Length: 127
Image (cartoon, rainbow, N blue to C red; front, top):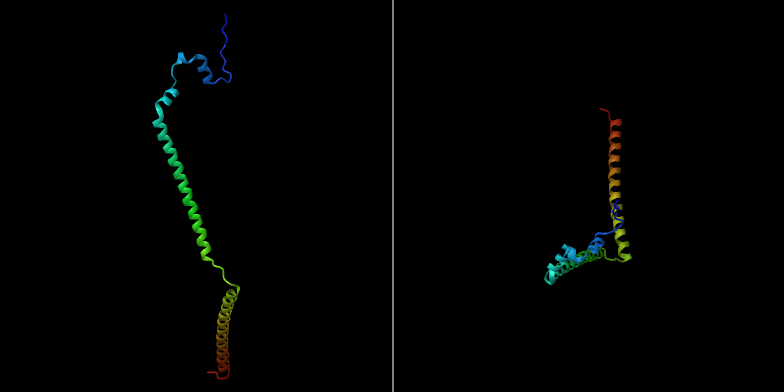
């Protein structure tokens, strides 16, 4: 007589274990681990999780404080000035640049005049 081939179609190990029965297999490893934990072990795990959460919150608070401090520093560096003060500052800078340009132009004209004078002397008094 031919035997029927076993096929596993989408059956999980949990379903197979349930068919076998709890008495036949005894306690599984998972249930043994869970009972070994107990309330003390759970409390320790909860403390670790709480410590990690509080550390994360503290680091986020530190980052937020740094960002706020940077924003405050940027605002302090650029105080608002009146338009009149800006006009005055720009006018003084323009006057300074104009003075420098005029003095350099006068120097250039002096050098040019000296050069022309030397040429005229060389033409009129050859040696």
